[in-house]
Length: 240
Image (cartoon, rainbow, N blue to C red; front, side, top):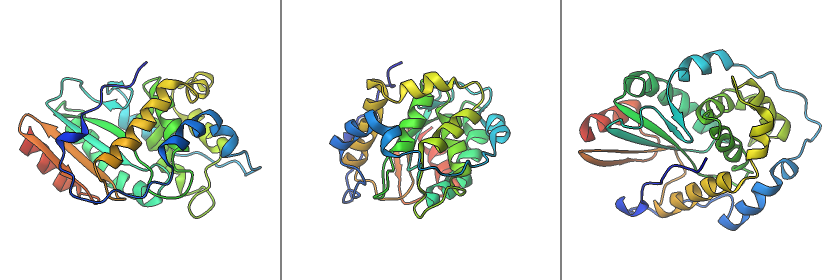
């Protein structure tokens, strides 16, 4: 399944210097082919994955298509830019995404689009490949949410994500075929989706914090630097 069409980046104002990306774009093509080797098994102890039931309750029954969550005909689109391997981004995620899913996505007022961008020098894109690969089975949002839920138990500063941990998260996602998921990580579709997100993060001059781009009939609102839930909901009302 090919990635959904991307919203052209030139529609947004470029007001900031770009973030310093942890991985240059050419390196992404190399990483996608060797992801399970480069991050290593490491002999790390197994981590008890928690939160699977809560994750399924949050996203169950909502239509997904690749990186999109919600009614494809929803009047408002919320692009959610995040770094899965950042604990600060995880904290932000749980403060904003569950209420947005319940309040505006489940009701059909808006759809969410999950976008990945690296913000540090760690192997920040390994989780992005894993999540996008889960999206090939309409489970990207469950994977990302469950990954964030368990990131705090991963040792290291920043957390050292291993192939075992990625597989453990995949194994906890309801109805995700692990064999198909692992094969998808090496596909051109997944590689292209991750590269596209990284390039657009550069084009948008996003700072190294969570961001939301809200688009609807009433225009576009670019919310950067960890916008609050109230700011996001206000933008949805303004553009919708």
